[in-house]
Image (cartoon, rainbow, N blue to C red):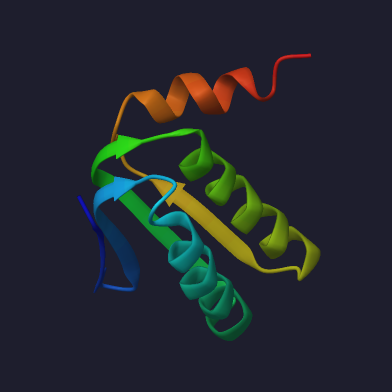
Length: 92
């Protein structure tokens, strides 16, 4: 399934899958927003699938925002897979 990005009340809602086939365009789109808007919030409530490349894409955007002193926030409950993959990346 494709990834659809909708802007609603200043936050960007993701609908669909954040997988290897959609991460490149996802990163390009949000990197531009981070450099333009300075404070970007992404809601993942409607993400139904995410793989490791999707989690890596979120980490990449967080790193870009940190380097440029901008804000990139991920909110919502979305796909449960994201939490396990994201938590495991911070275990020492």
